[in-house]
Image: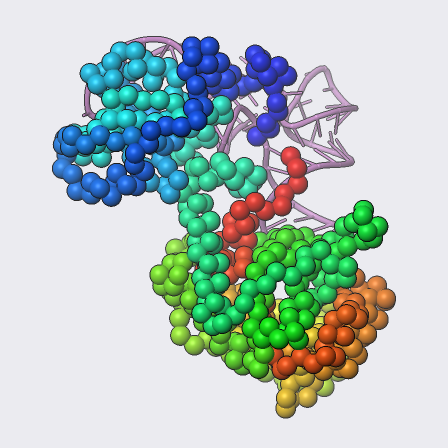
Length: 502
RNA sequence: GGGCCGUUAGCUCAAUUGGUAGAGCUGCGGACUUUUAAUCCGUAGGUUCUGGGUUCGAGCCCCAGGCGGCCCA
């Protein structure tokens, strides 16, 4: 668990025996003129290429074909004059190496037994054969150390403790091919998102992560400092206000996939730093961008897993295909409470409903926040199948357009998947005068102590005053998309999540 | 922020009422030319997260702290 450095690195005196042994081997090899970390090895084939070239070799076959392969030693099975090792390479492919006294000679066999430990990278040159048991193997003519491992590999037969998996992800990746699959799935999903946008004529932009004023979401920012400019800066909580400036400027279809930072705790679905996708499209609405968002998710599922009925980590299936359910926030809340709730329902009554359900709410909450809390508690958390919930309270949606016919609600949807919020979409508010009023309301909340409230961004308002076309906008958590598609927790979808130092 | 649980060998975990800290794998020594988590014989390995306290005696009880997990806000 603890990885203290040795008090004396040269002798490694205070090290556990297993690390001392490996350090000693390295030193002995160097002293004997053998480089435990050679710069290059005459590899001719990947393990996967060997496997692909000989898919159906019968047992106990000699092909006569010579190859040079490399891999990390995952298992070793030595007998007196014949040694077996299971090599594993990057994509998880395994191939057996065999070293026989007859082929490599006494010295090379003794060196193999004496020098090679589990976890070492080795190079094997030899003939492709199958063993008597039918295992595809490379029967060595010679071998060479490719990189000596100085730390023992944890046992491969027991799961690594979750904390160690996160803190030492490299070990997790070595031991658990599934961990590497997750990384590849994530890459496939992100690539699919980009391709879906490119196919639809969107342009990818990168907007500031260091901002002089944070905005675009209600969240607490990280504060940092520019020495040269002698001023505080904020790590962005959302790219929204910059992407809208792009739309004002005539980039009518823009998207960005990048990191957001929110100065909040982490749990199974939150991380202080997370990957966010946002996209804006002129002349789109929250109706049309809901359709496109569904397509983005479905295309990503197809690209990464070849199906829209994905298999989750617990083995269950999750169906993302076809059309998705749509609810309204007030309608579904009314149904859950058994009584009509509207934008005109007084705050006192909402508080009473919360109290009746033993839901504790902040006494400062107004109508909008109370409705959202009640809804999340009574409806949102129980939505398993992909569901769009539409028409949010205006009060809590300061950047969203007022509904075109329904008073008191905004043209905003949230997409819920497996009980958590995956994405949100708006018909964007583009009237600069109304926008200013909303931001001024927010800034009054901020002045009153709400440090999640937005500030008045004068430059953003100036941009809107030049005229932003009617637009739809969407934000989707990329980590959460992976969670939705795999059933993993957010810490498994992020390669190196933030953890306190040991 | 609050509550509960955990923290022991390289890894995964045991340890009765407070009474010499154990196992499997790994390691080390040996045997073995067809193994598949090889097998067999032998053997080593500990600041029990840290610091205090109680006690004849603490992995275990008490206090403070660290790190992590779960639940709640």
